[in-house]
Length: 462
Image (spheres, rainbow, N blue to C red):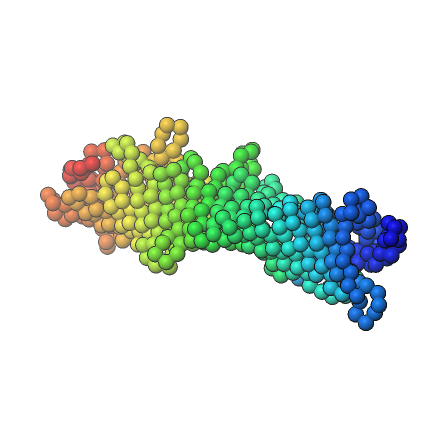
């Protein structure tokens, strides 16, 4: 049989198949012409035929394209509009149901799938081997309905958004040994040492990563490790994308049992497991809690949990001139830290420990000036309210509000008209006044107002 005979015998049938797959006459004609060109050049196309049901003619059961094979399809996922999908590989084998409907496509060697989503994002995956499964179309002229895709070996996924909602485009790249794509929910599950990177701002690894193609959201499970780096570029674009920092200068690292990422808001949630909290750190500062949430707008960190004293925070910060270096450690039920104002709001059963003593209160707010140049971070201000108890070596003070300011290195403790603050020490016993002023520079305590007005000195070892 000559080449013309093969073309004449099969052109109409192949055009019908191509038209049902692509839905447009011009594209179907181009696809048939390309298939025959490949076949005539190097015997690159192989078509297997089986007898038709109840007829003497044959119907194609498989189509094989070899040597840099390309298949262009109009595919549709459940509840999604049709999209253009291009499949490439060294070899492609397509199986057909009843010679008409696309059932599967298997690609081996340098396999690639490229599709354009409804939001304009370009989705591309590369692998050694791929296998696509299709459902029967609703009617003969409907596009092929993709059900699932399985990819193995050196999987690389890339998604480039066309119309980002905030700032410049943030392309996503992921790597894994195996990927399963489910069209029903547009989710790609990456396994086999998966890693995900968003531009230059986020790098993340886990045991399993579920990536939602339509929204860009991701769910990571098992041994989650994430690193955030502040984006480069102009000050305005960097400010719009900057993630909350914890008073440090370097990258922010997080480890957790699982994590959830929102692409549209840029937020992330990190969850601990039973008996093991999620942990975030930047330079010498750290937070551990059952849940750690990072928000992009506003630039904010939240840490919380279901129980009491579940949030542990540590700041490497100077408290006064007499402490050249030190740590401020806080336990609380919840924490909200603003990366813009550098304010940390601690709520519920708060206990703060620094070089000068221990403070307990219902709420404590701290402002910590980040480290700059050769200057270390500094506790600039601290306000405690609700059942305040300040304990220092040899003395204990009780009140309803305490304010510390770094410029004069003083703690000022006040109370209410019918519940004045008081201090108990080994030398003077109990002393009450309208305000108690603790001076870190000379370890003295001023008692202002009331019969107990005085200045006492109690040495505090450092």
